Length: 82
Image (cartoon, rainbow, N blue to C red; front, side, top):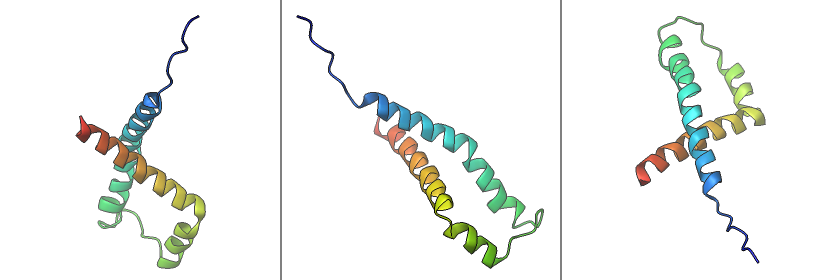
C-alpha cells in the first residue's frame, strides 16, 4: 500500500504572501498618490464629508479596505519572519 501524502497549509500561506505582495504593489501606490499628493496639493477636488462618509459606510468598501490592509500586513509579516 502507498501512503497518501500529508496535506499542509503551506500552499495557502504562500498564496496569502503573494496576494499581499500584489496588493501592496498595485493598490497601495494608487491610494498613497490620491490621498498623499493629489488631494492635498489640489490636483483633484476633494469630496465633501457626506460623500466620503457614505462611501465608507458601504459594507463592500469596508471589506475591500480590510482585505487590502490584511493582505499587505500578512506580506510584511511573512518577510520579517524569515
